[in-house]
Image (cartoon, rainbow, N blue to C red):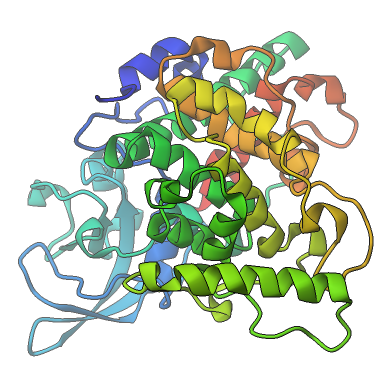
Length: 449
């Protein structure tokens, strides 16, 4: 079964098209052939960062590429990267010039670069999708490079805010969002619909590739990882799939031991200062993992080095989050399509009382705490459950949307758009706050395009 297409989602979220036309009237309509669930900025980061740039890149003519220098990230008007240096072919010819990045090759013309003299020194045109290009539109000897065939990382895991971007302080930088508060509010809600639209299309893509159950399970795991640990949570959820864990039925603790064992986060021995309750818990988990480990011997485990603990609060530790994930798997929260999705949040409240609901960490300090806090559950509902339900064509998912808690992105975008003396009523609704996040991604992070 194919899940919602772009056209079907547009019917559920009509305001999204209004917003897209406002910020980019020349934008190419997505099709099944060129649907890309990320942004151009993801490709900028992919090209710029040596640690994640694909290896084995080749030109459209099949020549091998060595990137000696990706160029200087340009935050002003003009090409995306200035002064890039590439070595081409088996003889490693050294070619120097500017680089421009697009999702599809037609954007070179759609964005007007073919008549803009600022792009006359472009030597490298880098795209995600391959397509025959009209060479007459490009500067002489332009080298065309495609990224998607050799990309081996999960673009969703990229923190695009970690790379250079403008921080504009004048609302004149942006399109006019309207004169009256009502018009501004409507525009923000339209932008919020666009954010939900993009999340829905991406969820539909994952559902088509991996099935409903795995998509819901995997995206929930990623959301539990928050910003620090999205990547290892996704890898773990793919290696220990929901179907593979189904063999344990409702035995959440065995599932938990397997997730800990494969994550590389199960301590080999207790710390000297641990109380007896913590030591007992660790022994019981090891007993379960030793019994099951042989079944998973062909599954490559992660290591502790794969996880990021910098600035992590104990309540957000992945060891706790994996306990919640195990209980949701055991509770069947990812099964039965929409019924499973609606059951998802209730499972969080009904999770069986366990060690982690009584202790903050392995230290055993007594403190009752939820396995997953209210804020994270809200994020899971907005970023996972609502897109999942929309991808299934369930329009009721838009009813009673949770309001995103205030954060730095919402606050700074509102300040940039409306100045320091604006009324917070402009973004009081769930969609309006989602809209501010979308505007940040499109018009603040995207200003350097």
